[in-house]
Image 1 (cartoon, rainbow, N blue to C red):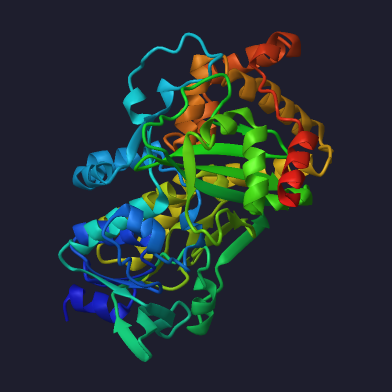
Image 2: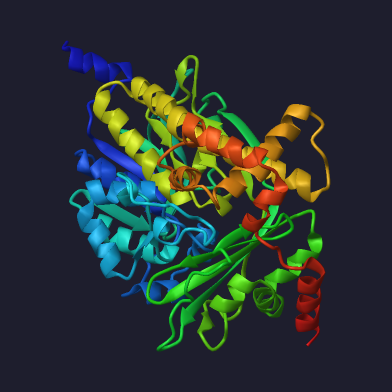
Length: 503
């Protein structure tokens, strides 16, 4: 018997590449299929929702029903980390995306109006985001992946569980799914769960006798509301001015997202501690809030644009948002060999920070690289994937967790009990936030962190950045007052919303 035969009998080791089944054909699943196919794997994507049945991004936005991804008609950000990955690895896909109307958004071209001394530096070409609707990105990516040799996408396929060889650490050998009223079993050398936030991977593992994954979950404490618009013929986007395109006033946060084909979206978010803000889910109240916030009033002026989207749900509301971490490796190795969990199914964070799609691509690439490094040892692949994700993804999860806890505490009017926490809060609010509006070094560090090019620790752990933030903080509120952003009057905004609803 050869070593190769022993690897196969062992069950923890299989020749690679082989057949991969990917559960979920959203952006993370499509990314996994793309990267695995490039590594020589034959890939079957199982997607619960139906085919796009659209010949253009606009048709996809109007018609494509994605019940398995309720966030698709909310605002999305495609960060510099993702754009750079596509530029370097998949330039043909990036070209298709730009041809479909996506835009490259250079953040350093529109700095805060109070910022002086920002000059070009090496690496600035990496600080470019992509502006487009989520459904545009997914529609183009799906078409691109479906043309890849060895990739098959089965729509309307609802996965019900895993197939596995029994043991303390089962060896996953395939999946069971329902399609067109038929129950089907499908063999696989590896199974990838890319089913997103609704993932039931824990249940699947329990059914095959695998240990439960380590899981922590915490509510983000926020609701958010999105609406899409299209510029009218002959109208242009407002020129950058004193009012920023995104801001956080504690009781309300907003952001503007330029997108493809002369469209853009606006998202408003508010902590659960302000239940009266739930009226923003209704279009008249949302529109009234737009007019109460100067930056948004300029963008959503009816003479400049018209709303687009589902006429029955013109404002898309989303709640139940959590920060959740799941680990599928423990000190003994993989919980189930041959089973890998990617994207939001493993690391789920508040979508307000816009990291989900970029993180999904990043995580899929980590898996593809781990499989390349350990082509015949699935347990080593699992350990490798876990280690790299802890290093490159978990810092952003922790940042989301800390930011949401802090926002919830402030919204509820609670003061930090620990003096060190209070000092950190003041350093951030009176130092970091102000410095991003007046110091080019700190602003560039913030942009690099926001685009996932550096972790928060890397960006703000830099000695030069820290010293500049400290200088801004210590000079006091009087000297920093010109860099403050004036919030809208809360009572005025609420009254406008109430009048609009009453009318």
